[in-house]
Length: 255
Image 1: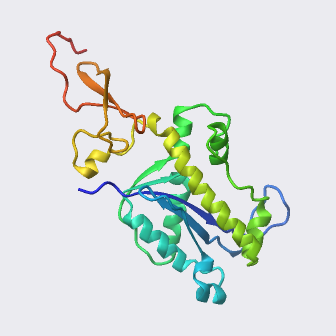
Image 2 (image 1 turned 45 degrees about the horizontal axis):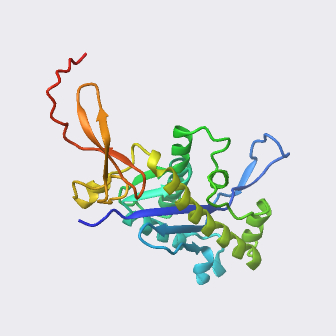
Image 3 (image 1 turned 180 degrees about the vertical axis):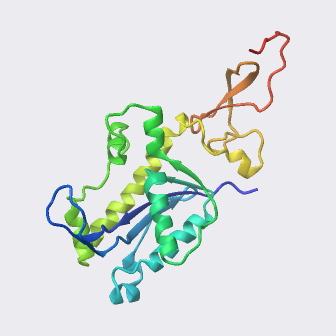
């Protein structure tokens, strides 16, 4: 059985456009248009190259309607349809749901089901960092940083079709996925609910976190009534335990 297809991905979207009376805490009077997708960046776990696909990659469509994201959304749908596991920062609340919204608007059904790993949720659940944004995590952990955008002016320039703005947006999107992969690998040893690689490969004695066979015995895992052999993976840092309990002659009363 093949290893699971693991997809790192990130999306960039245009904002909604509407009319308001003032700058702060306003109701929208009328929508001019709703948001749409600008670009996606992604990388498969088994490759080194990070890819960016934007509206510019469909020049005929872009020239006729620069807000038509149907071709771009179809590319994203195909990626998620092939993935067994996806990794995104704030993916459960943003990327996955935003993607689904554009899928149904563009007449696409749901992609093949995948397991989602949200690095933002891991950071919030396991640690108490001052900030859990992708950029701040990269800096705190000393593994990289995001590309500075200069604020909303970059998005405005992209929506106006400015070549310089598009180049910067593509660079920004690519670095987000590069940094995402680094943050994921840093947090991975702390993940206790990571999808088990062995389920996908059919290999019994492999690291559930990365599939490595290079496991080291590290004491025992104790539950209320059972003792299990504990293993440590030097490749990704994941701890795991044997499925079967160790034989013991020590009587244990169960509450």
